[in-house]
Image 1 (tube, rainbow, N blue to C red):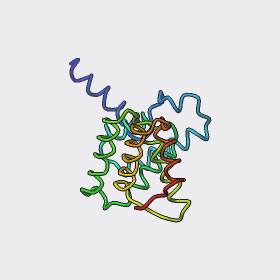
Image 2 (cartoon, helix red, strand yellow):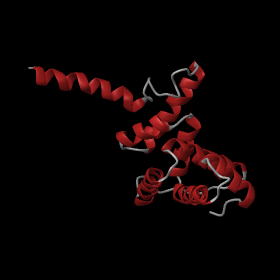
Image 3 (cartoon, helix red, strand yellow):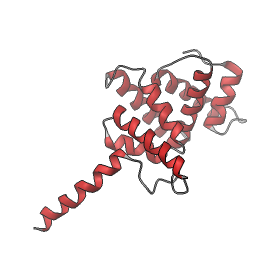
Length: 165
């Protein structure tokens, strides 16, 4: 009987977490009602773009602002839906961030900065191209003593060199 009641209790808890960011998410703890609404909207867009609940949770747990999730979803949409291009780009993002000194949180912030810059230029790119650019910027952080932070490096590189992709 106890084993039957445990799955019943777990199933209802898992469903809301897939629709909305976790209530204990660090960026949401002190969020205003309007900010919480932005998080919910970003989470819903992410849920419709990414089928893997574990990946969604990882992205939401590491995002510091809904714009980071929105940028990820927008860039992901440039690939055919649920195709190998999407999967490769997401794998690259996770692999590069895991191998980097910069956290996934910093990679998502840098991705959002790059997306904002590209959008302001009236241009588009793919998630795969964006992740490749971030990887180059991450390598620059390791080789240039004046660069310390991935998002700041991305902004500086965009100002100095722009983006071809």
